[in-house]
Length: 293
Image 1 (cartoon, rainbow, N blue to C red):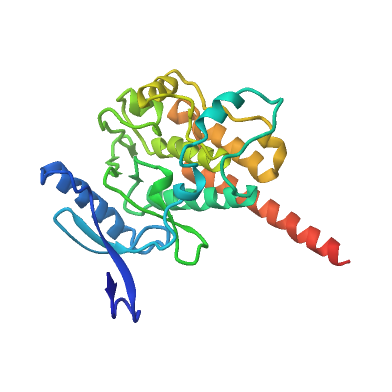
Image 2: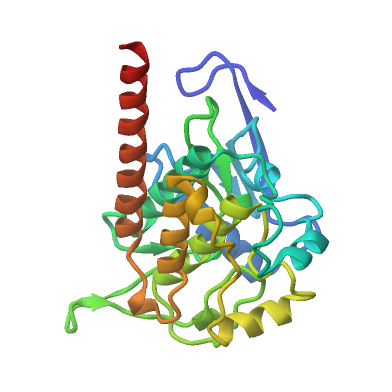
């Protein structure tokens, strides 16, 4: 759909997204849409959160992303599962990465993704937990200079305890899927650190082109690995291939700490990633200067 005049623009393409065509019109479906809409509206000033233009029932009118989501060019369609299983723990053969992203592109995307989550965790009205952080929730912006975070139907506004002077952990029920933290799979009390763990999985996808625990045959098997405190395999040669990829390995390792209190905050993750990028940019500038002299 195209609006001829909208928000100071002559023309703008927008979409009407429905939570799921197969869902019945039940209370929880309306609640998913309500939560998605509220978070998008509350963070409307952020360029890293999608623009919402209206909502009704179980539908939302929002901006259109012509370049699609990050998962489309990060993960292989078949995930290269067979090759991965042959290569796992084998450092004799060639290092195989299952996407075509450069180390610098991977690190830049990771930094932009972390920035978007920082907008949620740093919201002035209180911490907002996304609680469903996946690569297909991040879209390239119109000029491909950054990413935009989408889909807040599982989000949680954390409550503040005035007496304890801290945010209250909350329960959400068992977390389905293969991208979540140990505490979600144990149905324990949760904090914003669940997003940090899931971001680690997203960065693993950027680094390798694979889902975490790609060799697993089912979600149940992935959940067993995570509950047991196991981590997805990372070929140690990534740390030698480039500074950018070495930094990603470092941050993934921090995000995948088993206990949430041992994980960094999203703001610490942002700092690590952007400091690494500044180091790389400085070195690139130095090499340009040397080549000209």
